[in-house]
Length: 373
Image 1 (cartoon, rainbow, N blue to C red):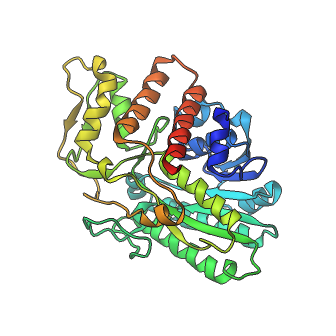
Image 2 (tube, helix red, strand yellow):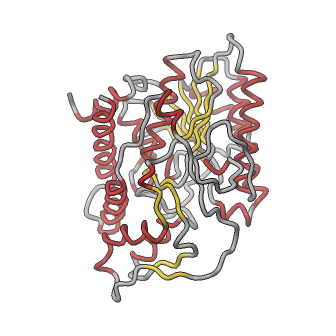
Image 3 (cartoon, one colour):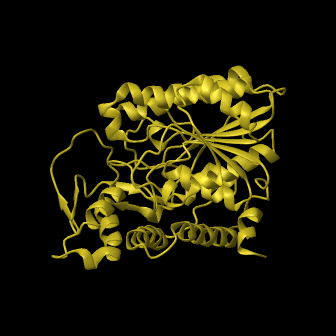
């Protein structure tokens, strides 16, 4: 069996030769998903209004030349509808969003319009689409009304949010539920949809604002300690390939088992051992950059909180494990190695980053396959 075919077996060869539309494909998660879909033999189409960061993984991997790239804003219904009708997708992964909590405080209306109206536009385009399609709508773990419980939130727990970003994701979930029951739940519907929730996703190629790994890499690449606010805050850290494998499995199940999982939500999170403090994560990741610290100090703590941040938020992943036979694949040590190695190679300019990215996906596919045997 060739290395490339491992992923095809992993997803029962369901993406090969299929038309797949990814919204938000120029972002961090979208670029990883696009790369993986290309490995799986899919015909990939992307919709995004811009390349959100400089540098960007999308550009570093040269993805624009490998797919059909549409420049459009998900808040523009006509543009979204035109793309859907032109592409005629078999699958849609809706990732396009304003994903940064701190930005939501500065730009609340833009955050709400992108995350809520953008989702509604994708759903409305699907409603008017007269062909079969399986759509996975990605929201966030922050859609839950977080009261900082020590147990993980289940898919049927209350939605809500104390900040604009969380509120926008909870509102998007309500729109999805309304569209499902109003238009897609009937036996005559050609559309199959499901919702995915994940959070604290890290990995090489992320340069978005106000994210801890991005702040670390930006500072360390300059030989400076990173400034952090909450060293003891705990997060369930997971590599980006973990939830993406869940998204792909979920869409596969929608296609192969039309009566199963339609209209349902699924959490994708890491193993319990990967719930670490910010300080622990930074200290472990700093190993890859230790030669760049003149005084050995990799971070500094400031007592300045610009906005509300949850101290604890984790998800219960039992449903995905039992219903989809999905499970987290990487150990915490492998997670750190993946992240540290990707960025170090990028800043050293020592390797084609598309090759590096595909090597990590290949490793993940192989280890996932070993787990499910």
